[in-house]
Length: 221
Ligand SMILES: Nc1ncnc2c1ncn2[C@@H]1O[C@H](COP(=O)(O)OP(=O)(O)OP(=O)(O)O)[C@@H](O)[C@H]1O
View 1 (cartoon, rainbow, N blue to C red):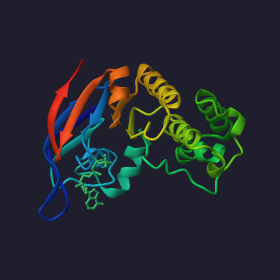
View 2: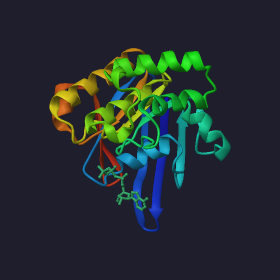
View 3: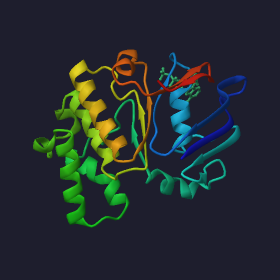
């Protein structure tokens, strides 16, 4: 599903964010990406959804070599990927319903299908009663759940999440984890970047540890 071969990535000369990084993630896997701040976790996620290009190496996602992909094809790649960003990236001028509907509109789905799917996705995260709220009229935990609903509404092949439980209390973090586990059980491959050791302890899965841009540990409990 995801393969990286000897990937190097530098934002600036003489400062490597990822060095000689190789990894295989089979379809349906669930892995934590962990490591200290600045280790390269977000960089790796950005490479996987085509927001950055590696300086060296090859990256294959769902059989597509994204290293060589032309920029006009990147949106086609992203349609297969759900992304939960560290800072949610909800559109502040659009309602919760409109935010979650957005990826389905991009896919050209029909209106009745969009309505059904959005309602189901929001019900799944317990936000079906807040369809008409703007993001700023929601709590941090609710915004996080909205971002997850938006990422999952398309039933993506791959879910990439950057610190999705950061700054949330334990109950909300557990609920969010259940959503990820549910998506994984339905076949979505999950890559979950986190510092949250407690979460990893509670829900043990494959762990890939980065240190200064290098893979230093990869183990499955
Ligand atoms: N846009 C950028 N321009 C220049 N350097 C960057 C940029 N983004 C990240 N870096 C650098 O690349 C390295 C890896 O950063 P990255 O954000 O991938 O780490 P991270 O493991 O996700 O950290 P955190 O846990 O704090 O989010 C760091 O040294 C960082 O300073």
